[in-house]
Image 1 (cartoon, rainbow, N blue to C red):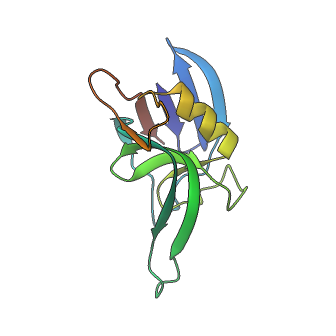
Image 2 (cartoon, rainbow, N blue to C red; image 1 turned 90 degrees about the horizontal axis):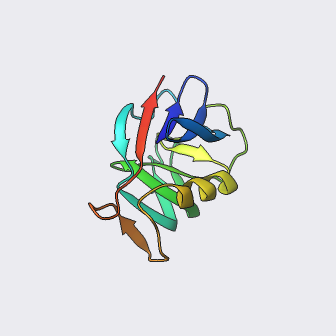
Length: 135
């Protein structure tokens, strides 16, 4: 499973109850908090454009080629980040920002298994890894 600790701004990957790798992350800012709960990765893609926010409010973003995206709840995901290196501090609109190298490792380590398709969705035969998000 994947443990997302919002208080410590850390993600830890576990196999059979043993931590195998830990990452410093940037979760959602106070106005766009990262959702808490227990989920499963439901979809993955190697790269996509992400955009959102509001131009008038000054929080619009347009980010092409966001890499190693693993969605765990609606449009909340773990993914690579090239637009900042301020890991350890909440910086996002709710997603879990990681370095591209860390996101790539987690992408290939976690389920559902990706075999080069544009998108992979979890299924009974190819389940998503559990993601636990908490303070």
